[in-house]
Length: 66
Image 1 (cartoon, rainbow, N blue to C red):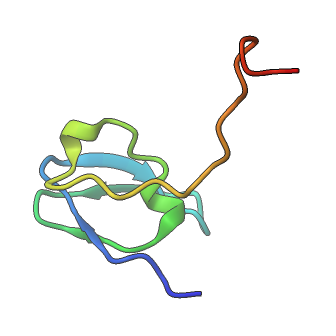
Image 2: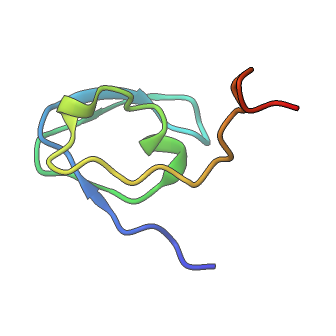
């Protein structure tokens, strides 16, 4: 399986380093390739082009359940 392409930030964000749990400040234009960091940035406006979400199965609605 290939690693996801890095996504570029459009805003400065504050996150925690996934390994050391130290606070990090990532500035505009920073490429983020680590999925553990990417998942901490939940505001779509922070991304120049939002990273693609992994494929997840959808939930069945009551109308489609048998």
